[in-house]
Length: 244
Image 1 (cartoon, rainbow, N blue to C red):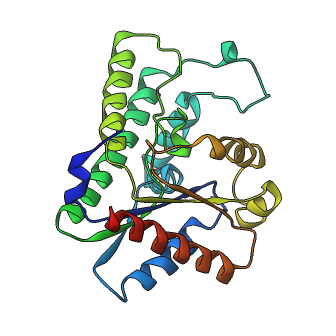
Image 2 (cartoon, rainbow, N blue to C red):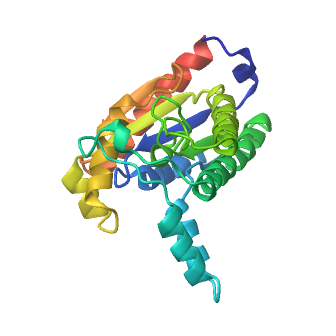
């Protein structure tokens, strides 16, 4: 897939993987290392829905109402092996709108990243949009693959799909995919649901980024080892691309 418009952009290095894989820790170390030789900024391209939800439900007077609405209207999805696809419930219009707005939030962050790249500033991305797996929590579209009850929800799903198609049209120069086992991930993220982490870990190998080079690293190794491996992989990939 040839994308000539990428030749005019500063590089982006994306760190992806399950929660607890060490994306933020390793990417921060790479950010400091790359800043020694040029202009580099960090961009978080996740939706951070948990942090946003905690802020909203913490608001005085309306927080309790929002918490009940979220609980009532959250789309009920299933993890692999828990139920058949036919048991997945359609999201309500309110839940679909919330999912769509989270995708718009990700798109706005993506636009800020693209602005930096056009200015010649390299980017370290914590997470990166993808469409290989239709799961919002794994950086994919949240409305794809879910049953839709009405025309408005179908319209939101189509619009969300367009946002993601645009975002994946610009590939990362290097993808560092951090792999972690379930027990390690849960030890690092004890506030996350065990089953949710298991589902994400199962999906991580399916992630792909339109032909971008993907470097798989074992993030259960000592942190210094993982960082050194990431540095070597990034240097090698960027050197090959500059030589082309």
